[in-house]
Image (cartoon, rainbow over all chains, first blue to last red; front, side, top):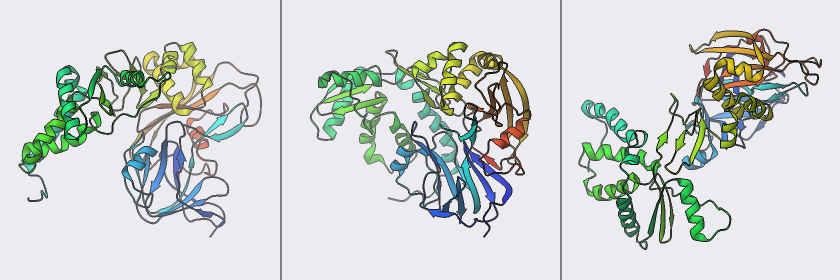
Length: 129
Length: 317
């Protein structure tokens, strides 16, 4: 495995969450428990991938995901997730908050959040909603 | 009893009109216009009895907020404590009532439940939301106005997206709730500008931009921001979806603003994206040195994505 990410020209997004296909899972990444890719404290919404996949923390920021089957990226409310009672292990469409669900084909992806520029601090930050 | 494995073509043909019939009860205000106070009281008392509960005093009120105020008054609260609305006997029940109604209308398998079904329907017809307490039931009438966008999300840039008889309402922009105070700020370009600059939440900023664009046009948006259009490009993505990306910057230069090289005395600058799911327009703060909208859009992708990766989405939601 290589240390750096090698990108293919395949990408998709659901709101500010962006997926970019990569050729392999780089070494040095740390496998973590499935979790929300992004969540809004204000609205209680989240973006999360549902299905059979592994998720790794990338040391330079973001996640690397290896989808072993067709997975579903949902944007929904945490209250909806509790109501339907499904886990992130099952590729399921749950009622949407704002963004339609996205079908994620099997493969390896680099995943992170769109950025904004803060002209007061001269720094790029992840967008917040 | 036989299991229904599929619908006949004739039955499938009835689905659209059946759905429209049920949606119109709320969205064409049939429940609101045919509201019957006496029937509400009788049906709610019947339902409590059906559930082996003591007969309630039924309060029919104009809005969900009126229900909250009344229940707090009855409980003797000095300060408002919001009581949860009931999970059943409200507007949400229309989905499953509609489902079973179709089978009652087209099959004879549910005849034994018809009376119970009708009792629930009678209650729901007059109850948008309700608070069910011991011996007390507080029922809110249906709203007199519901405004939605083409995605059927609650949306109105000129007033409440949902409004009740007593004047209580809520603001929504492309399905997102917006506080009344913030909505009112957007009636003037000056106040909207202050609200826009004071918010670091992109969804709230998108609501402000959407209100200004719909009510004042693009000219109003540029006036609000004191900005000029720097570049505009149309991108056709892999799935056929077309996106217009714009970059703007203010005419004024500010001593305290920097570009990405750390140089001071810069204008404010934004890149405009439109959400393909909701239609919301986002203005994301950007570096003012960009003159090419596509290069700018690439720069706003996550930091580890190189510029050699094309700015074309295979799927965008």
